[in-house]
Length: 141
Image (cartoon, rainbow, N blue to C red; front, side, top):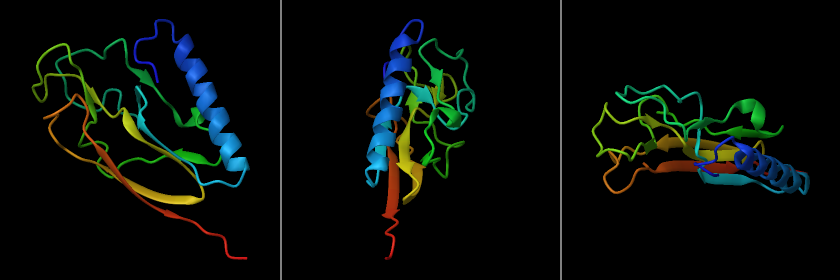
């Protein structure tokens, strides 16, 4: 989703498209997993981590109410300990740069899922990886 969208119009359009696709695929009976950099603070992490920087203008918040029925954001077991995104306007220093959880997964309720945020200390990117394990819930007939 767009990170730099003054006024938020593009983000709202993208979120509406995402909701429509999620619902459409679920209604077809599919298992649905969407993962990536949502450019929205997930799971209440907009100000969860110590930082000497203010929350940047490019950070939006994705709330549970914005996710369609039958779906959930998979909250990583260590969501409050390991951020997945950092600011890039200055070189990275833990506790100085703004950080939050912007990366993750949305899954349908026919999937069991757990995730962890992998602490790579932003060595190779401005993002840390998120690892998800999942199991499809197969209905027995």
